[in-house]
Length: 301
Ligand SMILES: Cc1cc2nc3c(=O)[nH]c(=O)nc-3n(C[C@H](O)[C@H](O)[C@H](O)COP(=O)(O)OP(=O)(O)OC[C@H]3O[C@@H](n4cnc5c(N)ncnc54)[C@H](O)[C@@H]3O)c2cc1C
Image 1 (cartoon, protein in one colour):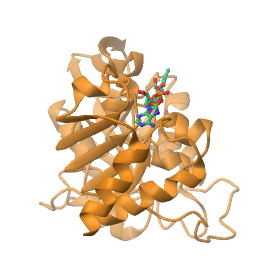
Image 2 (cartoon, helix red, strand yellow):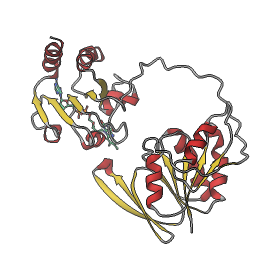
Image 3 (tube, helix red, strand yellow):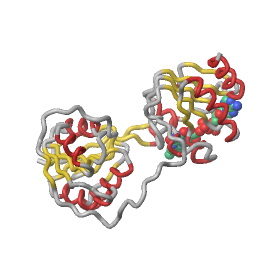
Image 4 (cartoon, helix red, strand yellow):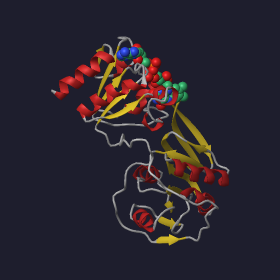
């Protein structure tokens, strides 16, 4: 019987474990990171926990070939990694070594003997497709939160050589840090916002609401009014705030797929026929340049 492998480079792997357990195969984790990460993974409900040792000043990616060798040696069927940049790099190396497909956007996976059926969102999230893989397959899925600790298996240390890359400096980003994932209220702007300076209006409203500021993709990737880590949607962030206030965003599915789990959605748009107006709980047909200062003033008073 094949083994379901999970690649662990950060603590948030509960989603990977759920997916692995549903396959009903033995599960093994290969851990790249400090010993504490290996120790917590060993209590997360896996059958085996292999640890590549302390990484020192080498980045996670320096262990790509070592991870691939460990997994290749362990009868892999399905190999799971979280949708994070370093985990993607590791699973890519595993796929190349196994000559297996590497697939992103998996929302469901089942096995039937050696056949793996993978369900994925396609066409920007408007459709789901099932694909059949006859052999090992590497999947990038939602990593999930930190798993609850349970019974421990031993941590098996494996000697691993890091590739020739070292961290020479870490320094904080000059961009303001925003905890979008943890924000309970989010104000998001789209192309209805005409100029970067106008973000000051939005910031004032967000402050009055106790909200974080996000945006649609063109605002980050086109006009560059906000950093790329602030855009919401199929190729951006998935958010689950209690309140999502969308200002001047048309509401194309590639955007709204990122807020399916949001509580109350309010859309403000000059166009009563914009797609968002049918997707939201409250629709305000109006100019954001009138609405935003008025709501900020009302909240402040
Ligand atoms: C493969 C693929 C992946 C994509 N991924 C993403 C993604 O992850 N996230 C994402 O956001 N997009 C994504 N897109 C782009 C997406 O399809 C839309 O083009 C994008 O979301 C539109 O952004 P927008 O609503 O800000 O701009 P627009 O579509 O231009 O809409 C602007 C809206 O503002 C309204 N408006 C104008 N002036 C005002 C005003 N003064 N007051 C109020 N309303 C006003 C207009 O009526 C209009 O509805 C993707 C596209 C593709 C093809």
